[in-house]
Length: 269
Length: 269
Image: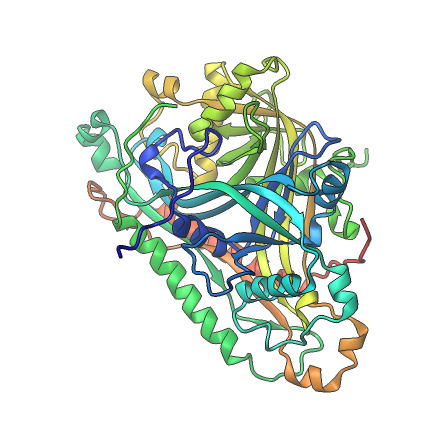
């Protein structure tokens, strides 16, 4: 039986209208971008505000009903409720308790500064994912615990088991977790070298004068700094091993993205 | 005459309700976070959508009427309209042409992974700024040119003058720039070491077992990769000088943030 890649439906509000060739609706692509993003931007319309609310939050996609699900499967987004008091109030003040608060979640990675002959052709290499869904408060303690471990592990793998767990009653009480049921989503990815207009490419003097290429951009997890009451002499192996791996992968992706060409046919919209 | 620091007014929708001690309403603090953020997240309510729209965009704050204004002055936010076709349509489809489209702009920097004794006390060191304002299309060619240069210079200083400028008629035509008049904004900053609850701090066995501290996180601009039609042998000095400086500053900030303590008194809400 041939494996078929799951795709999100393209709704009017989720469809990529510009540079369509950069668009990707595959669940695996989108979920990968979200789960590798340490800070998500969560937006929703607060009932009492003229502006949408935007909160930076920590989140991770997973499946409580099927923890073995992989990135290409249908997943929920779990958000750590630490800073989400406005969301809680919105959920309470609207009749959307059952279906949840409509929200949009953005995850973005900057991978490179693309320097062309003219500012107008400058660009970024990037990976951007947007999810649309409805958020409700997680009330089942087992599901809440699943989400807390999922999110902690996404920050530093193996940290959960190497810290004091499980959370006590007060911690379970004070921590709120949101589950976002995803309606749809999309990703937009740019890789490759600079592209310039024919007119500039035919300008010999310009070509001799302006350096063109890509400055790879990536995030580094630096040398750990022990806290004031730390008593463990050596930085743990699980932490150092992960740092080396994630730092290497981040730099490699940014550098390889320069070669991996996604031809971006310009499309109006 | 004593210099007085300008602060944004705290509206109900902009007030920081949780961990108030991390809040900062100073224009200079907020503008600094925004202008050092290479990717902003712009949110607005599209009329035809059940969800807010969120777009990653490139932006920069400045003052066209007084280009010499510094970061602590009243500034406008200029957004490069490259991916903003939905905003354009929203502006057209609403009666908000004069006052503009209400939007919320988020700028976030992740500065460190704060690893405590228990997952519940884990945190991030971060700088987050939110701006609320109304966006209109920039129509004055001189102001548009000012914004294009401002934004290009924010990506790589001195790049504007070292590329083919000014933009030709077609480029001025095809590039749209949004000016966001800021109503208010806020920043939230976390620095310092881990904090744990008394109960865990009194657990000797736990203190002996769990490493606690901060993993500094920062963005690196890596070794430039020349493009296929580049003819300039050496990477320009303005680019390499800036890379060294910005990389050094980024790492320094993340490391020094571990020491610079902002006591975060927990506040409900």
